[in-house]
Length: 102
Image 1 (cartoon, rainbow, N blue to C red):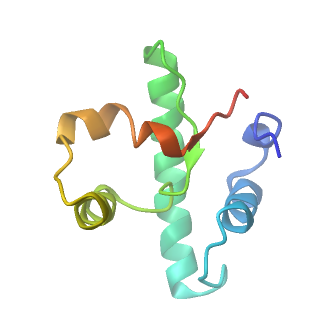
Image 2: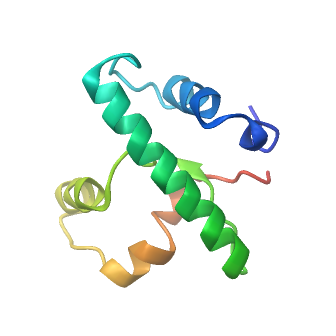
């Protein structure tokens, strides 16, 4: 599925697609789902801002519904190393991205 056309969709519709594509386990109508949606919407705005100022293009990935602390904890546990905070602010794990402009 190409997300370029989906990028213009309302945030709620894009979140539903994201939930399906990355096989998220929480209910969209639950308290957890609402929390994840709010984080997703904030991260989506940050991605758009980065794409305006950066020559690299960033897109939605499996971590787009996580805040920075959750992402860093996941990466620390899975990789056994700490990520550079400044690098995260610019890009998330480059291999987990799905390019919006693919």
